[in-house]
Amino acid sequence: MNTGDTAPLDIRVEGPDGPVSLRDTLGSWTVLYFYPADDTPTCTKEACSFRDSAELKNLGAQIIGVSADDMTSHKKFADKYSLPFPLWSDTDHKLMEAMDVWQEKTLFGRKYMGIKRTTFLLDPQGRIAHIWENVRAKGHAEAVAAKLRELDSNQQPIG
Image 1 (cartoon, one colour):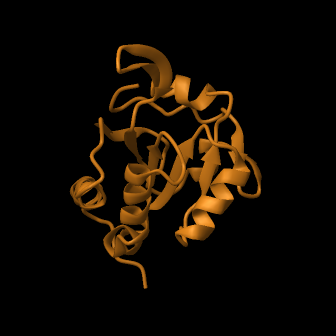
Image 2 (image 1 turned 135 degrees about the vertical axis):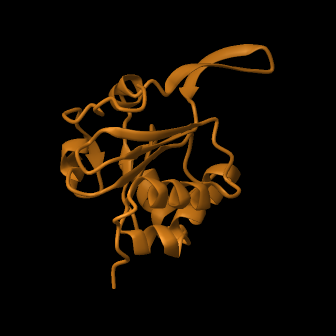
C-alpha cells in the first residue's frame, strides 16, 4: 500500500460489536494502527499514547487498533487500560496482508511471520494520506496529530 491508494474497504474483521470493515470508517479521518500483541510493553505504550492524545480527539480522528489477537484478548486489554477506541481482531491476517503489514520477521536468527508495527492515516474517503512504518511509540501520537493538522487545515476542533 502506498500514499494515495484506497485502503481495502471491504475486508471484514471482528470488532467489539461484530464484523466490521474499513468501509465503516468512511466520512471521517481514521488513524489505523497495526500492532503485534495486546498487553506487551511497546504495544501498551502505543495504545495509551493514542488514548491520551487530546489533540487527536479534538481533531475528530477515529482511532482503530488492529492485531491478530482475538476479541477476548482485546477486551481484556481495552478494559485494563481504559482504551476509548475499538480494537479489531484480524486472526486470519486478511486485512494485514492487504495492507502489507503481515511480513516475515527475524528474531535471534529465527524467521517467522508477524505484524510490522505500522500506522496509516486514512482520509474521509478511505484513501491513505500518510504511512508510518517501524513505529516507535514515544512521540508517535503527537506526530500523527501534527500530520492530520497539516493535511486537513480546515479541520475544526470538536466540542
